[in-house]
Length: 275
Ligand SMILES: Cc1cc2nc3c(=O)[nH]c(=O)nc-3n(C[C@H](O)[C@H](O)[C@H](O)COP(=O)(O)OP(=O)(O)OC[C@H]3O[C@@H](n4cnc5c(N)ncnc54)[C@H](O)[C@@H]3O)c2cc1C
Ligand SMILES: NC(=O)c1ccc[n+]([C@@H]2O[C@H](COP(=O)([O-])OP(=O)(O)OC[C@H]3O[C@@H](n4cnc5c(N)ncnc54)[C@H](OP(=O)(O)O)[C@@H]3O)[C@@H](O)[C@H]2O)c1
Image (cartoon, rainbow, N blue to C red):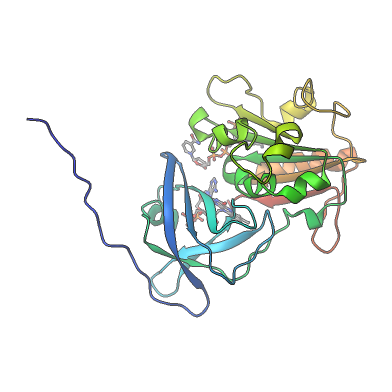
């Protein structure tokens, strides 16, 4: 007799309305490995955001909703809102969020915000987006925004992860976003994806700082100088606090100036998590 495993289908988990937040249904969930998953929710009609912004996402808590910041991966014009999430084993939110299924409801903040936006950068020729781990999320939105290709000649994502299976979205990015009709033509020549895996064998294995310092980030790939140049290069950093701190220090020493929404500069930062 052959064993058959029947998926036990549960009823969608619906949540009580809360005046402070929007409520939205989960459309799909994709698990990359035991540490990472992506999911999409319906986009409420009223919800607008700029590529690179983050919003609060959550579930009911004991007394009030348990909300956490999440960068939006989708294009600013997309019909759904897509997110890339860590699974923290004992994390108050993600220990529960990793169990969501299509049809379940989540709370969604009403006001997206953030500094990883082109408004916070001065004009330039090359845009470098440096990410560790889930810090990739906002750059998925920016790299799929047609306006970004109008603003910069070259658009580069460097994604540093521990293990090969942590390279979420690797295939789409390595294919230079050919499945995305609104940017495919520009991305074919202007977009560069540089994955690096630091704790398993891979063709590229240095941390972000190492790739900049030894010049391998630029060699044979990019036009322009084989180093970071504040005159024409613009940089966005998203990931661990330590990576941001060290890279920002290097950028400051090179003459880059941190920007904000009110005062655009030559680089911008956002932590991918607190802790
Ligand atoms: C501006 C901003 C944007 C964010 N965007 C995202 C995002 O797009 N995707 C995402 O997964 N998280 C993101 N986060 C982190 C997120 O808000 C939560 O921390 C995360 O969902 C875990 O929630 P938790 O309640 O399970 O654990 P928490 O109590 O929030 O975190 C517990 C610990 O887990 C670690 N941790 C938390 N989040 C991460 C992470 N993303 N990567 C590595 N380690 C982490 C930290 O050591 C932290 O102290 C963002 C945080 C900020 C401040
Ligand atoms: N991803 C996993 O396989 C894994 C496994 C078990 C637990 N976890 C937990 O999940 C959490 C997040 O893990 P994560 O892998 O997303 O994040 P992470 O530890 O920040 O590592 C992501 C990438 O950032 C690099 N990095 C770390 N510090 C840096 C710095 N100062 N400058 C430049 N690059 C730097 C790492 O390189 P290095 O490898 O050189 O540090 C790695 O390539 C951790 O708290 C961990 O406890 C993850």
